[in-house]
Length: 394
Ligand code: AMP
Image 1 (tube, rainbow, N blue to C red):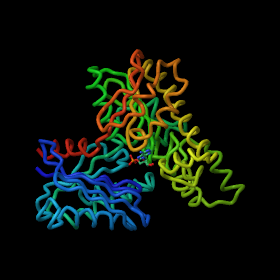
Image 2: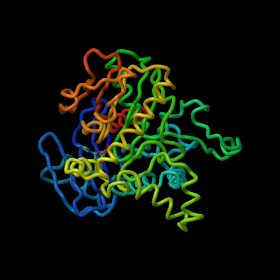
Image 3: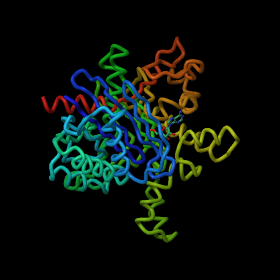
Image 4: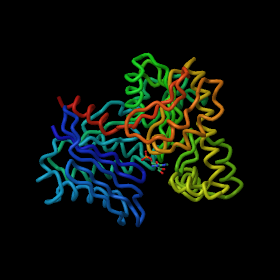
């Protein structure tokens, strides 16, 4: 079965074509920095590696480019779109209504749209991906895998807000949790690596969006993102934790409109708001040149992560390993170093030399004698989605 996975993020589209159940990757690629004149398009098959920098205005153009690459008569991997049996879409917010991997129909699309107001950077991009894929690959089954699903096991005491009960009971206002496909995949890998399915783990997903999850016995027990993917850690353009009184102050005293505040907190805050740069590579390079706001933003980012680690050690009543994953978690040795600094009380000790090594496989970067492992685990949301799609269809 040929399964194409489409992971349509806020500024990127990752894709992978897999043959299942062998999990053989036929081709994979990514379009990064969508919306810029310098978008990076990569495509890799067994025989070819193509990288181009070009203007890609939006997700629609991104998917058209991916389809053209797959069908390219010279370097492509398909003769026809009919060779794709199913498409697995990563969808960020399934709310209370969509908690399982599901075949997409109009009702499912309407629900994904309904939850767009809760995930304004993601669900609309996911829907565009679905609608484009329905047109471009009209004979394939379209399936949605939800980021919220892994966190369905978070206990009520952790997911309920301390506001009147009717909002939880009648309106579904609660912490949902996100990046579930990634946290599920890397925590499973960590348990296998540690040979301990009951391991107490803290999974730190640091990409454009950032979140942290406490995992016990393979299940999510708490998560830093909340009702929408906006709470918690400092992100590329999202503020993470903020005192809600600031929102009222901005509106009532500073004269901002609700829409402006929404846009400000989701698209103009986080590392972008603090430094003027969204991409951590640019921020690290500026910090190296002595840019004070970039240095401070990196420290703020790491400090927030440290606080959550402390909180989750309390929630787990212990810790076997912390996991770094996603674009920043896997690639930024500096961010890992800042997070693990002065954490000896928790038995967290980084080995600087190991931390600086690059690898695309699971690796341990803790000092050899320490009890708590520090693992860098490349996430593979695509494989996790393919497994779930294959399981649904067979
Ligand atoms: P993701 O959402 O997982 O694709 O991650 C995107 C983020 O990863 C962006 O902020 C990138 O700047 C960051 N990233 C990717 N490669 C590196 C790198 N080598 N060093 C630092 N950050 C990186």
